[in-house]
Image 1: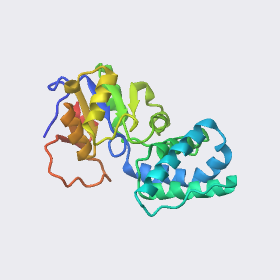
Image 2: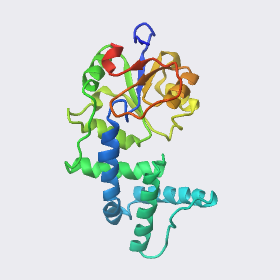
Image 3: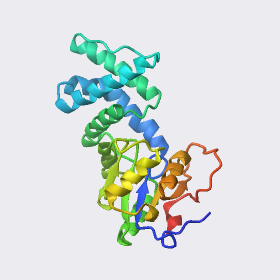
Length: 249
């Protein structure tokens, strides 16, 4: 099924990142391993900073919820700084092993990646059609925005440090799961409200059908993005599909 921006009176585009603008392999084979390898050193260097302590406080709250649900999880230990860091690292790795969409974890990962980008150890990737499409859409007067499970900090860092340069100039606003879950239609209504845009004139592009279903339920137009390396979407659906953003032009 084809989809036309002009025929659908689209004024706003909301983009997913992983599997939509950016290869899934970059996230799972570069970003996640970098955060995993760097979490201990980062905590050793920054554990006394107020924003990091806030992230860790939220991690502990999440851990308490896991305990109440009787999950088989590693304990968070008190005592010396070394003991505290040891147990936090184990819990963070446990969350990452399960790809938990934890706000506290995502915030901490974003801070670790920030150091990596600043040191030149990380360069993010986007699909080859992304830069040109973002430029054309902005020149056409469209509002371009991001909704990802990664923290807003992580989103901005990714687009600021791509292998084709800084793409943040094309993007207006960023939303993460502090707005709400990506599979919850209320999240998309909140985003449209924050953007002061009509949901019916907003297009959400993602590689995940459950997210697209939620956006459509909220009144948005939707397009399924089929990129190389994406996870198979086996559920029956009626969303238009694209393989590159250029198909929307």
